[in-house]
Image (tube, rainbow over all chains, first blue to last red):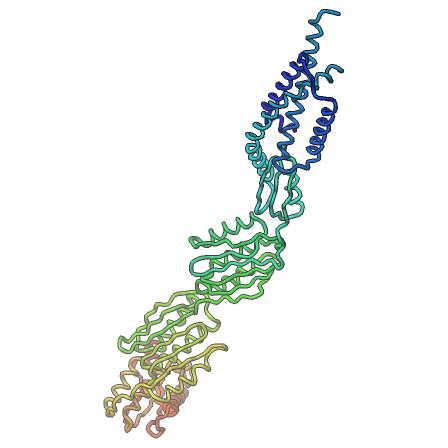
Amino acid sequence: MAYLTTFYWGWLLASGLVGFAMGWISVVQHGNGVSRKLRWWLSALVAALVGAALARVVPGRFGYWLDLGLIMFALYLFGCAVGSWLRGWVVSRSAPPA
Amino acid sequence: MHGLFRWSSKWWPGVIPLVIFWAIAAWTSTEPLEIDLAQRSAAALKDTILDKRRISVAGRDVTLAADAFSEDGRQSAVASVAAVPGVRLVDDQTRLVPEAKPFVWSAERDVLRVTLSGSSPLPASRGRLMDAARANLGGVEVVDRMNLSRGAPPRFDNAVLLLLDLVGKLKDGKITLSDTKVSLSGMARELGGREAIVAALKNLPEGFSVAANEVKAPPYIFQAYKDPVALTLTLTGNVPDSNVHAALVAAAGRKFFSEKVVDNLKASVGAPAGFANAAVSALGALSRLSTGTLVVSDREVKLSGDALYEAAASEIRGGLGKDFPQGWQFKPEISVKPAAAPVDATVCQQLFAELLGKARIRFETGKANIVADSAGLLDRLIETALRCPTANIEISGHTDTDGDEAANQGLSEQRAQAVADYLVKAGLPANRFSAVGYGSTQPIAGNETDQGKAQNRRIDFVVK
């Protein structure tokens, strides 16, 4: 993993930034998000993919692509979390006290 | 925290550009990554001795195929690749180099090239052997057909380096090392090559031994040609050393009294045992021929030419082989020279005087035994006697003045009789000869000097 991050930090940074932007937007975005049920399914899918990656059951290039995708996705989630939390903090500070 | 969970349900649209990024990253990065990992893996194996190494990378998985020379080496190679940063899995397709039993190595030399085949223990020693072969065999093409195998005996390299040196001494042939047994066959490059190879094989490393040495050397040749027209005896070919050389030339000078000795001999090692004795005996036989060629090839003596009369021919055919050391072969091709025209007694006397003027019949010191060197002269005297069958001949013995007169008288008689007996034995009628001893009473030179004494010690043929 350390090798991949040093090798492709540019792509990983980009994933993080996309996540940050998405997180930033999501705080003030109107409309419905993903349903609770679908969210569980997606979480299960991601967990299964992580499990496959850790168990190294996917061979060759597909295995590499899976690893790459999961790392990018992890940074995306991290970016989202940071973006949302920061936006939430900004919004709560600027809103007049109720 | 609850907010973060709520907001996360709206994070999904960003997955679309993320997937696009991911696709581009996968598209552009896979090949460079694979090349980088292949290079790093190869670098990690730099100090590990492997044969037929192949590294292929798919994603981050490395397939390592190689032949290792020990189980430790094999495991350490796999571990080295697994430890390369970025490598996810190592597909281990390594195996141990097959063990050769027996461990056979060979070098074969023909006219054009030297082919090294069989087994070699390690790539490094294979390279060293090839380098040594090229250096030793200067200019000859060296073909490498060696395989790498395990199971080489200890000190294999040293033994093979010595054997490669021996390949340089062969004109053609094969040297095989099977475990620790060396077998050699073929033809040595030069005279004495076989002996040099035998000597070098004594330096084989401990534990190695010679199973078979069938290396042959070129024949050791000595030739003598007696030319009756030019009156020369030409000696060509090889002699073992300067002592034998001098002895042969001296013997030729004694035996060939009317021919000039042309000495084209050269010293060379590799003479068969008993060479000097056989060559001297054979020269003695050649001296009895009117014209002839002597070829000594290894232990085979070929003598061809014309004897002066029939009895001499059969004596040479039957007698020479007996003088040779054991293991020598004699192949005579002796014919008889056509008898010369008869002459009258006066001419006969002239011919006797002419022959005895060139050389003397020689005896052992103080005895009446004719020495072998005089056989050629006696044959010519017999041939002359045969040309005047009606003449009676007095064989007169003379001595110098040294010693007791009575003893000299006796010796001169015995010597004259010995010569007469020799002639009779050769087939001449006994009644034609009378043997007379004159002691020192008829000197032809002064007895004061050794030279004069030598002239006085003589046998004369007097036609009556």
